[in-house]
Structures are given as structure tokens and as C-alpha cells.
Image (cartoon, rainbow, N blue to C red; front, side, top):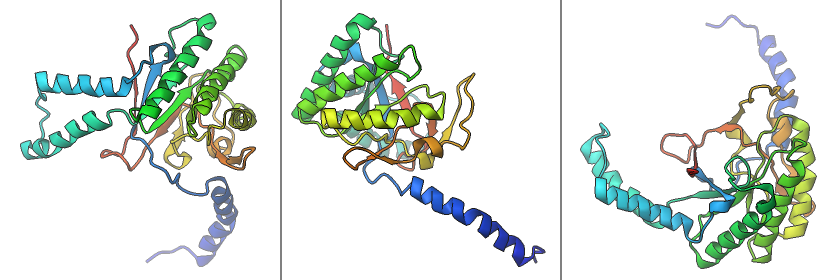
Length: 268
């Protein structure tokens, strides 16, 4: 038997009904397209033709040579899963490839234009050949003053090259967001890039519904929570644009464990 008066529930509904309505306008629903279960970040200067397929072949060769370690799992489960793992490595070893012009990039500022353009051309050629991962994109630099113009320029070069080659969809990752105003300021940039390159929509595969904000040291938490910075806005052509920082910790029901993994290619 509960002791709360009905008026307590009524007041709770009164207070939160406007919040419910606002959340629905900011987050209209699940992203309808496929969401990758992992993202592989590859330095812009290290993107080569057939990269994803080469990684898959290398993984299969390692599996053939060394087999699986003792995972402590039911042998019947391993026997059932292993053929599917092999099939995945052979057909789609990478689900989301992100060209990295940020922390992973190993070149210098005077080489970045050439490296980004070359990476975009390689990705476009792989898309045309049917060998690219189902999701592709780029991580630029942060919007803080020292890297702001360089970061947007790399996005412009990459997306313009993809658009010229007929690619109509790419993911943009905005890293190291330290203030919600950076995300607000980024949205019109996305709209301008959309018009410039015809590559749309710029939407992160990471849904704010499955995300929580993890501030970096020295960052202040966003005053109204993450939704205020990631809510969809209309771009110049009327398409939804979401700009989400790279510092989201995400979970997704699309992977067996419910966790979304991120990987980075090793740098020498």
C-alpha cells in the first residue's frame, strides 16, 4: 500500500510535461539508418586504397595462423560464432571509417591540405569500387582558437572532394567541445559545407538518446545538459544536422554487449 497522495503525482506531471514536450522537439526519434558498432580512426596521412579489406585479410591471416586463445567460453558457442566472425572479417571488417585530421594525424600543418585531399580521393575511389565501409567520415580539429580555421578548412577539403565524386553522405566528428556555444556556432558551418560540397546530411551516428557527457579535465559541464548542444537543427537545405563531440560515451543495442567500441589505428 502506498502512502503518497494523488496530488503528488499530479504535481510531478505538471512540472515535467513541458520538459517531455521540449525533449520530443529536440530529439524527434531514433536515427532511422544503420548505426555502426565501432569506429576506426585512421590518420589522414595513412589512408590507403582498400584499407578496410586489407585489415580484414590481415585479421583472417592472424586467425588462421594463431587460432583463438582460450576465452573461457562454451566450446559450442565458439564453434557457432567463429564462422560468423570469419564472414564478417571477409566482407565487412570495418563498419565506420573516420579519417582523422586531429590527434591521430601525424603530418605537419603545411602537409595537411595534401593529406586530407589524398585521403578523400582514396575514400571516394573505394566507395566507387564498392570496397569502402558502409559509414565514412572525418574528424577535424576542435573549434578552439588555435585550431579553428585549420579544422574547418580540412572539413571543407575532404567533403568537397567526396561531393565532387558523387558521395552524398559523410559523418563529421567535432572533437574536444569545451562549450555549448562551439556546437551552436558549428551548425551554420555544417550548413555552409552542405551547400558547398553537396555531401549530406552531416549527422553523427551516435544518438544523443544513448549518450552521456564526459567532460575533459578543465571543461565545465554544459549548463543544460548535453541535449542543449546536440538537438537537431535545420540546415540550409532543410535536412537534419547533429553536431556531436567526440567525447560522448555511447551505448547501443546494435552490438551483442550493448557497448559501442571505438578503435584507433596505431601510429609508428
